[in-house]
Length: 169
Image (cartoon, rainbow, N blue to C red; front, side, top):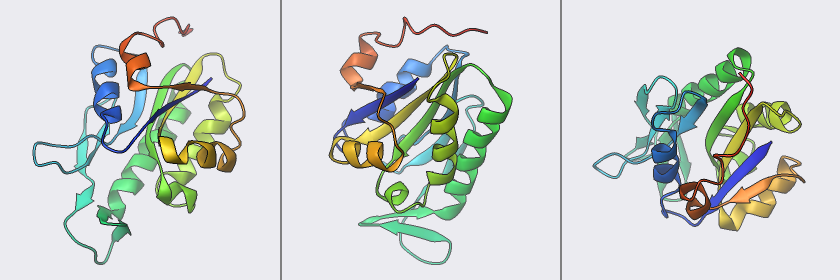
């Protein structure tokens, strides 16, 4: 099944998911929370490995979206984490944080997200949790052909909406 965690910009979606993953052994994929300096980084949910994501200015090997600049290597790493998860695990939750403007232009996490959505769309054991800004929700659902999903909020996540999802190991 596909879950879409929707919310406005900078409303704690990544942090809520980070808290939700603590102590769980059935969660994989990538999160992009902020560090103490307010800069985004990529977190491998399974291994806890991190790499810098947010650059201070544009340049070679930098992807710019509006006022934000990101290392292209961060997307290479994040895509590989997601693809390896899909290859190595047949059950659990795969987090993709986040699908946004880059992915709408078939960049960023688009490649791995497309495969993850296909693999989890009709799978009772492997679930995708896609993080999406509220303003892009319908555009993302249309681009990735996601007619059936459960849209959740950080409040739903905190109140335990995913606790009753059955995972076969």
